Length: 482
Image (cartoon, rainbow, N blue to C red):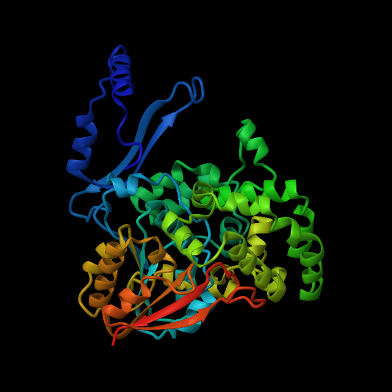
């Protein structure tokens, strides 16, 4: 668990410091507690009261119960969802200190149309921010959804949403995930949400209270980046992208124009602003040059080098960005029906333009699911896709949505994942994915493994019509197991 171990210097220093006052701190105390009792909740923190951020006294709060109960560290069953066990100390998990995506960047409307969801379906999805998994559950009753992510923080975010659905009213839920702020988050976390969170999730959110509260930093960087709001959606890697976007649009002189687009009453008005005042500035060579840097595009947009290469193999970054943005602003109305780009501009949602799970009807349905102590709708796996699939029974899975994940893979990784999908999927089951390439190289790998592959939609250069409300990817595919 993060914060469990101190480095050698601080461990020895505080051990001997407290011995001067006849207080004997020894690791065996914590070890004995965890041996004799099952942990219920724990928090590892640092006390900043002497000289903030210079003197940090380590401490922990630990609550346990008799061993007769199943330890929450083994498997956390919380009403309508289960957080499967994982080892937080493994290198594939410790590389992440926060989530990459504070919001999901794939359109669930397109997914739902292709998925043809039926009661009883057993689905695997990549967690991301959990928005689309919640949209599927709100759309169709009786689903079992396996949410998979190697980044523990992505699953912490989904857990927080499920815990909030289970315990909070709509106004509080909207404040947290619509506006992205809850001033009394610490109190709500400790008194209402904590009982519904697994140990790692509670530790993470207890250590990141400022996610939903005001930013108190006085640093120069914070001042430069404060052109937007401070809330849930300006945290994580995606939050860094939103803040950088606010700076760039301000420097390019289109910030006010984009705000006008986000409130435009008609598509006609939106198109007029985009074409006359925004497009030529936002799509300038300077902006494209920034995005074409492998480090920048990874840090700001979560695009790995393998995916960037696929993009370049079929064209240029300039063409790709234009084919992404022009159709969105020319064919989708941002203020009423494109919460993805409205979020980029406003850094929060509106009640008339938001993800499905934030609407009042969906909230009521999802709250029933989250509070259901009998059935588990969501199984949350902190693992790789291959590891998760290999633990399933052959033919257990109905459908899988892997977003653009295959673009990240090497050929060997792709083959291993395709083999695992083929085993886990039932006959007639299928997998959906998106790609930065119009014809991804791994289509041939799916076909070689016996899958029937079809392109649901492919974006053509210089098109004026968006594939979906995001339109970030060049293609959308489906592979069916015969």
